[in-house]
Amino acid sequence: MPKMRRKADLPTKICVSCGRPFAWRKKWERVWETIATCSDRCREAARRDRRRAD
Image: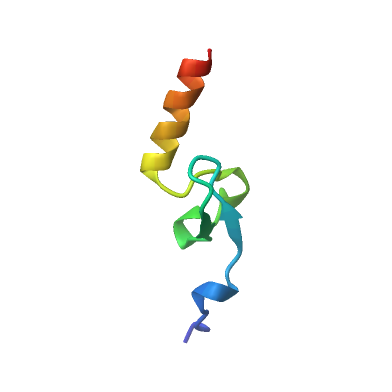
């Protein structure tokens, strides 16, 4: 049986879009180093902001 972990024990990052902390997810296991935003909404907002800056 797999070992149970608490969410507080998982690594966290700060979202570059909203500034909120977010925790590691299993689906991000292979790409955790490249993840910068906490959600699809923040990812789209960051993309919009980059387009406006250009």
